Length: 237
Length: 271
Image 1 (cartoon, chains in turn green, purple):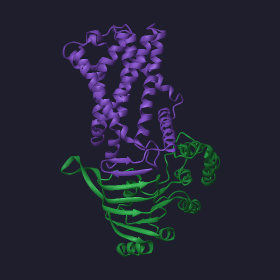
Image 2 (cartoon, rainbow over the protein chains, first blue to last red):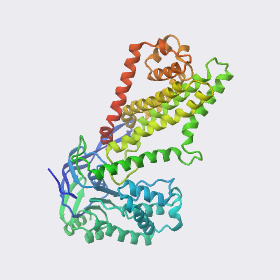
Image 3 (cartoon, helix red, strand yellow):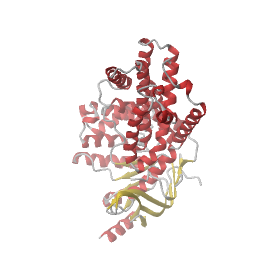
């Protein structure tokens, strides 16, 4: 099967985690499988913006990790076409011994920014992160918020075919969050296909056309975002 | 880029285009640079410690053995300690390789060969750097000669690659049962004294000698000593046993490096 760039298909996807547990009767512990996704089948067309809704532990992050290729499925198939970026947290892999500027340059190069655009890329990150002279200091000395600003600035300056977002707006101060939300909207509008795992129903309603509700690892609902939100509210109330 | 992921693997169906291949090259270089940055850490002398460490360690043991009035030659100690340090570092690097399979890029999955290539490059450079300091001393202070000195460095590089590959075979069990890593450390410490690191194999007798015949390290270190015209058991070693041990070691090395993709995929679901 040949997919159009920006498409995602999952077929009967099952994910089992292998967890180490130390139990009273097994003091040396044992590896116990835990099923996080059960028979998840979905198809996302290029250009769709889809909200993934569900309670904590419903399998949202697992689904995104699986689609991004970071996690092995125990059963079923995942197919993607195009470059897939997973935005989980705000650390694209920052190196503490380098400055913010050097990190932006290194990360840009490693994530595929062309050599002739790298200076513009660094300037865009500098402007967004608004770290002033700290941009030329080593990241090892940054606060968590400053690291978040830099990381978020780097990631959102890239343009993927498929963007997977896993609740990332928790960094920085109030002023930065407003700025980050704006940047994220721009980022989403530039990216091909977007899957957003979120608890912010307003954000989902405003940006997404489709909603998928996950519950205990299964797809409970898949349809228009308004109905998905209603479904999510109805079973969580 | 069309990717198909099943329980058996993450397979990229289309061949990488020119642009993707170029990006992969850049990523490999990025990962390699990162490995050296991590190695340098915040130390003032940075990566220079890779060269200095075997020298310092050899000097410490040289001092201890001189105090103990040992008859082992200094060159032999330098060769043994350096190669042992190299073997230990490489083995542990292989065992611990599962700690990070993202290559430092947390937002996008990189191809496995993009990770393996810098891993091998790093091992070659690291092994050569760990032997170069001692090689200079062997050549200039002990007049060992250029060819034996270069041979010592080449042996070091092969030893590094082989032991890292061996470690990769142990990484799965080490990840499942972390206690194994602790046991490997103790085993390596034991073999430091039991193996021919501090002394040539000619000093060993009986069961001690026989056990060392199945220790792959023996063949590397004794060959290096033999080529440097030092006291060595290499000419007396059993050819068949040696060939078997080395063949097994290089088979495991190949298996280790070639199995990274499968290992990476399988262990991504281990939490």
